[in-house]
Image 1 (spheres, rainbow, N blue to C red):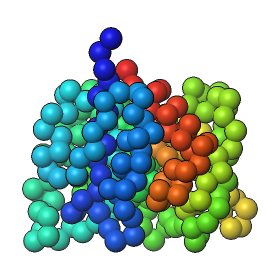
Image 2 (image 1 turned 180 degrees about the vertical axis):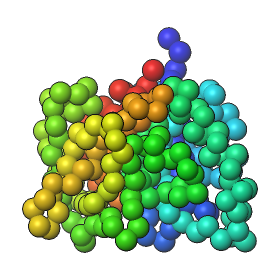
Image 3 (image 1 turned 90 degrees about the horizontal axis):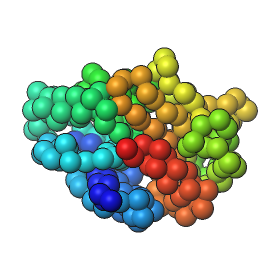
Image 4 (image 1 turned 135 degrees about the horizontal axis):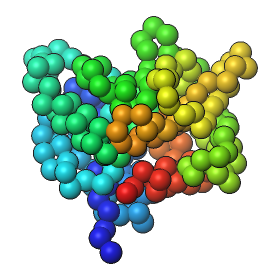
Amino acid sequence: MTTKRILILAGRGRYEDPWHDHAATSHVVAGILGDLGAVEVRGLFRDALDDLDSVDLLVVNGGSGRRDADFDGSDDDWLGFHSRLAGWARAGGAVFGLHQAANTFYDATDWAAVLGGRWVPGESMHPPIGSARFELAQGHPVTDGLGAVEAFDERYCHLRVAPGTRVLGTTLDDDGAAQPVLWVNETHGGRSVYSALGHDPRSFASAGHQELLRRSASWLLP
């Protein structure tokens, strides 16, 4: 039986920020998914996808970062990276976006369609981090039989979900309105899962969150 290869891209340079420790959360996720295949954590640099054809599952754990050309290249310098990712995903690739994945790759025109939605600056937000509850819908392999996830985390609110995306998890904002935080997308040619959970390692201490990660990755793996 061939071992599945899981590549986790951890935010660096252009796609990191001072509010998230992408290296720490990526390594925690690697440990959780370790029984599903061979897991590698790699910094999110322009050459990070050079061997993408041998990857079975791509996990994106990066952020909004900085787009000034003198810092980590211009938008044009990153065109090859984003074209590679989008082409692979549309050809049947499996993508798992974590937390800030909805708030990254603003220079990539295809990213929202691949992920199934995104964070919208000036519209999306989150209340202060704290104990949170995430309700899960039934009727899909990712969530069937799982109860609500309780975790210390941020509650992302007012994310924009793309047409055709299936929402499987919600949380309540401070006004009591349900906000989508977990979805699956099969409209672009491949499969994607996005989970808004995972601000820092405290979120991944939740047994429910760990199981949700494993379920999501298992569904995505070919």
